[in-house]
Image 1 (spheres, protein in one colour):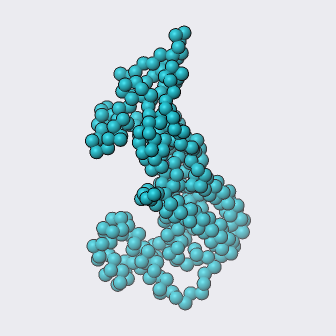
Image 2: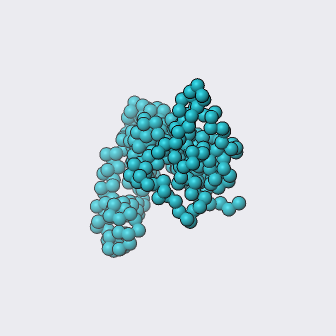
Image 3: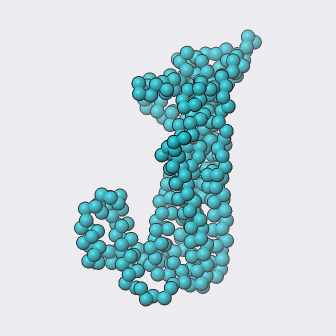
Length: 324
Ligand SMILES: [Zn+2]
Ligand SMILES: [Zn+2]
């Protein structure tokens, strides 16, 4: 069976993230806590409290990521046709004929799609309570996983923010030093600042300054080859320290933004896919028909969805009304 590029992304991205998390755990507890705060600065109480507090933050962070990455997602819908309509007492998704929603995508072969069940185009199955397929954890996320997912989203910026706090003044001085050197070094002036590629290939003006600081760090390291091995990575300007904090900050901003959006949706009782569809329907009232594409006939039935309200059971049994 051919491996899709999404399956490759699902393997590579979580491996990068989990490697970074374990590295950040070592960097925080040992390099910052033990080597920098306790050994170099001799702040024993602060160092001890820092190590204890960061351990408490890393435990839920690591376990929530490993849970979402390694524990299999909710089981797909078992194959089977829709049940009889008169056995239903809740709103059920239907097509425009009032028939209960089924899925014909990939290998679903007309399986019934109960409420809040959606087809994952990456896993190619219908999952009950499907929220979205997350490439960062390489797995489908369902409503049952949302508490762990929200925990991961909120604890990441807190861990990065509090973890990097003790070294921020030192790091700021080192970055400033690297930047000043990058502005005066002949090689960097010629090969970086004057090179048009520094504007294009490294994320525009912002990436250009980051690149200059990295080259400044390299120049500092080459100018001080005889310095005896430092007690910690924070003592002297160290490119590893800068990259660790820079990557962590990007991750923190990303998870903070995602955490705010996901928490807001969860408070409104919507999954990600439901919120996106709701927004699409509000802004594009003809979205159902607009989605039809002759190039993707298998999705044609998806574009004809309607929500059928099944009324409370009456004396004559439940009735079904098709929404206009
Ligand atoms: Zn399906
Ligand atoms: Zn999936």
